[in-house]
Image 1: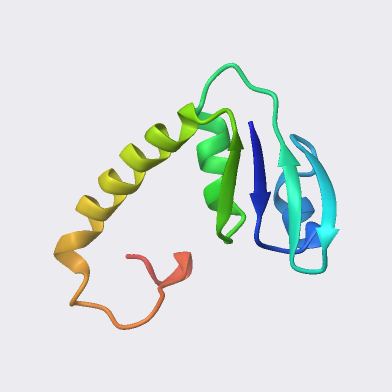
Image 2: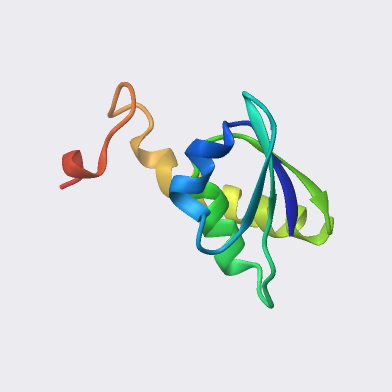
Length: 93
């Protein structure tokens, strides 16, 4: 999978360095390439970088990530109005 992450390469490397090739594009974005046989791991890994990204190739992961985003949105929907702002993992009961 090849994506452009909208985050500095140094920040992305802290999350993915062992599992991806990460190249600087500029101070605010980088190219990320991951070799994998399944889409589960790259989807989780890209979510973990905490930044927006654009899928360059292949395009199949876009549908897969879209399915995940809807699943997570449904899980969060009952709690949207109960919280204000972001929650960190130490705040989750």
